[in-house]
Length: 72
Image 1: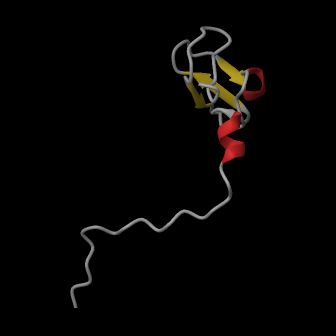
Image 2 (image 1 turned 90 degrees about the horizontal axis):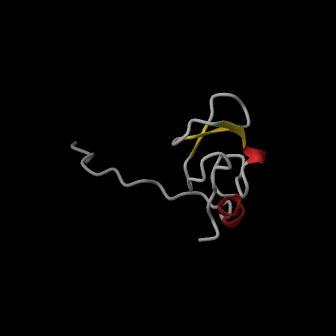
């Protein structure tokens, strides 16, 4: 799979969460805190950079409001 990130410290795939500090990502497995630019293939959101480029800026449709009916 081409759209994945790999932790340079422990080798686990797609294990990053957005860190508390700006521009940081944290590996869920080894708890390494890295700048997102240190992670091969990662984007600023700590996910695969290819995912960020491939998504067009299209508004999401409104979610259906199940269970909320107008009772007048």
